Figure 1 (tube, protein in one colour):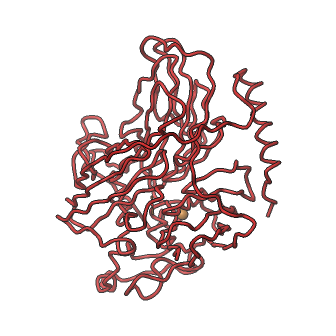
Figure 2 (cartoon, rainbow, N blue to C red; figure 1 turned 30 degrees about the vertical axis):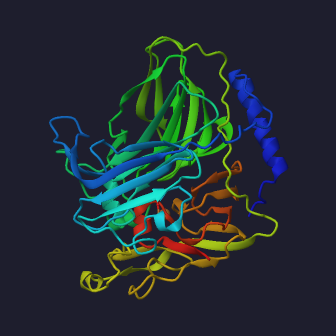
Figure 3 (cartoon, protein in one colour; figure 1 turned 135 degrees about the vertical axis):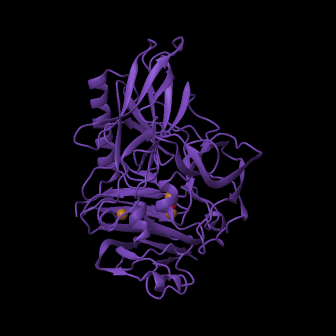
Length: 484
Ligand code: C2O
Ligand code: CU
């Protein structure tokens, strides 16, 4: 394993690429350590929403195809966008209009365990016709999202997700702030859903959709203010696909990863697995009618996803400088005293199968999102492990208040975006790639890669820890960590 970059090499590497950026682009942006503005005063008040999970119709394919029977939380398609300010309380009532139980997981939010939305682990599943109210104050500003945590191949595959944007109370002001959700759909020519999973897909990279969209639309044209500073919140909400989003026609900078700020860096290859997000900023061209293309470069040929077109009178902005977002206050792990835990991500030696009749007899089978087969494991254990009569034990029990370094080891030839609930990892390094030190709730493990991440175990409870390629999650690559 290559040695992890230390602070000095990170700074040197950062300065080198900054200098490169300045020379190449002639952009006058600061090389000095970024001065993150401190978090501003906390906003007050409560944001109340009602989210009715049910099947609705939405047009994804053009005529003559029919509308698609999507499953969503509101009449807004592709999903509701909840915007609130840091310090405000969210009261969100889930109404279950589905014919199966469900719950809402608030992805990326450091919240109390009882609000985390994992059936049986953190709450009783919400049965059809029932409702449940989530009530918490998100501690960090940033670009988060929410989705169900059971039967997710189907429910997320058909659209059951929404965005939760917690706005800064301080920091740079933008001329536009646009969330862009990247997601593929698996559709038949008539608009109905195709097969969302197959053993072949689940046991490999996952089953891919066949219709690429941004905000539920195929190659949309989205207006941005001419000469404006545009903040894009780029979300990969696909169940399977890995993307490398680039802007063709504008120089863009990453401001945040998974909603959490880092020093601005050029957008030139930030590969995102399912559930991962970046916030970027760019200065739009000054003339109206100019196009910037959002493309996915994670393909032999970059694939166009959307067009951003300048419009309106040019904004009176001076020279473009990407300014850092306000700092977060995630507790720093004590790396000197941290205990190290290794987690192995592997495929199962022998794919296990359960006969449907056996499954039907298992009281927790449905609740634990058990599928008929397992192909994947964490530390040789496939969720929900043997027995199935009750929750399996945690993968590991951590002591509240202590710091931990996790060594995440990918023993497979596939990519795995590994997600932790209730925490943000401090990403320390990889044996394969140079990564800046940053926080993230999901890290993408490349084939055979080994990454080191750290947390300070300050948030008590049982926290899911799983691959976010949903078919991998639902065929074994899932477990939980207990902080007690
Ligand atoms: Cu978005 Cu357990 O995940
Ligand atoms: Cu995976």
